[in-house]
Image 1 (cartoon, rainbow, N blue to C red):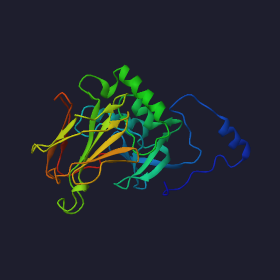
Image 2: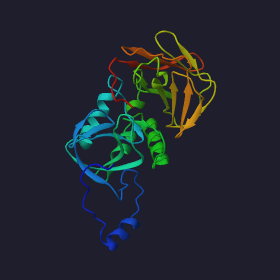
Image 3: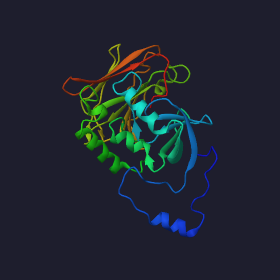
Image 4: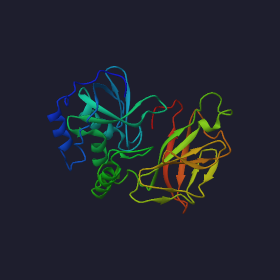
Length: 279
């Protein structure tokens, strides 16, 4: 992150710097960043997105919370509020500093608590990897533990898995007919084992259907299905597939359905018309 006023350098003196480097903790919630920026949280939009006092929007790295209208979305938002609203937070950015919505992508700390990890540990967010992630193994174990304890979204009526639709971007920039690859649907492996995509399918309300023929998703990783034409490939750790028939999704409202190879409906995602920053 490049904006905002930097905190005082607590490690200006070499003895303190040496001490900080030597400090080690086994807790996945207490990973204090050596270089970070401080700011106050003014708004909590949902379980994984906030706004700072200076207007900067921040999307939590490595975690995806349920969206508005989905099971446990309000619980995730309330928990996030309790952790960060009105408090000073420290931000540590990853390899990619901003997303397509110009939000800062960051690990968010309140004191020695890593908020991203807390959400996963409480079952109010799932592992969500695009690009690199510093805490992959620790957070995957947190998710396994939360699932075993039936916390949050892992309770009955929550996320059945093993795949989940995290967004449908129906309204491409400009004319959808000229920019079909500006439309996409993203799915994530919310389980704790790799999932072979062969036989899974995506369908809209107009009965357009795409069946995955190949690809394996590791836990927490995503597949992006774009509506236009292109060559299937891997980019920044995510799998990219091309429907080849775009545009597909109705901008004024649609529903994506995810079906497993046995024909069982395992997830749906509603496009509400005016899209929100919901990834």
